[in-house]
Length: 314
Ligand code: BGC
Image: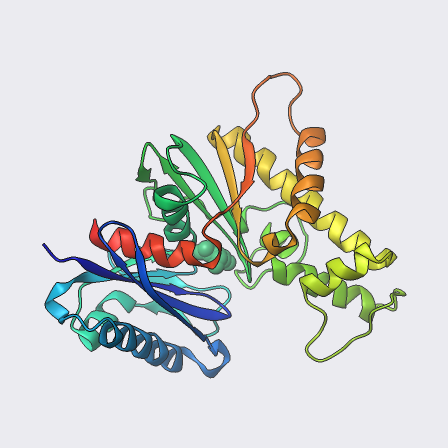
């Protein structure tokens, strides 16, 4: 039996990779910048390079690898191995990435949505262990979602179940690169915190922070909010409220036992979770007693890599 699998998590900012054994142990990991602005071919070359370096560093012959699981953002066909589009990766449309990578690495490749892979990772080894029905949201460059029911990843008929980042939260709201307006991820991703803060600064709203290059990111906005900056506090509060609405909608649609939050934004810890749980309780039903738990992911940045590799074993 082939004993190892490589998991790759292709994100808008970083490409993470790791080697997993069948016992679910992450034997090695690596991370490189995506450099998405340099175009699709460049990024594919970086993914191939990462797979090659992980395989070589493991010191194990190719024949010992069950394959590569690739978690990638955007609507896709898992069955056909094609990424339809990646809202946060410029130039990625209709990319038959599974076959491209298989041909260039000689390994069997499984394509999965990045948030699905991360949700499966948290289910197998993290916050969702033993949970019958969990939904995970990844709050990073965009917002992704993944649903695991009775140990099985629910992909949906067209393989795009759980694309919660593009649930429309505010009709005619902020434009999204996906073509819609008012998408959840334009309000609840780590990037959205920075974008909305910068927009307000540009519009002349007073703040203790100034427009720097690169502009203030979510951690700086949060730090300013905690230090009493009114604008930063408003942007943070609105982010938390948008997230709470997302959780309410997930509760009603899917009725999960657990909602796991992952991605860059959860580095905020209790500064996010405490007001989020409060906002969720205020916004949701009072007419039914049961509410899902809202918990942070426990695998940190490794969930996507672990989940993608675990799916490669399947
Ligand atoms: C994409 C999702 C992805 C998420 C996080 C969204 O914009 O549509 O497929 O999971 O970003 O990367």
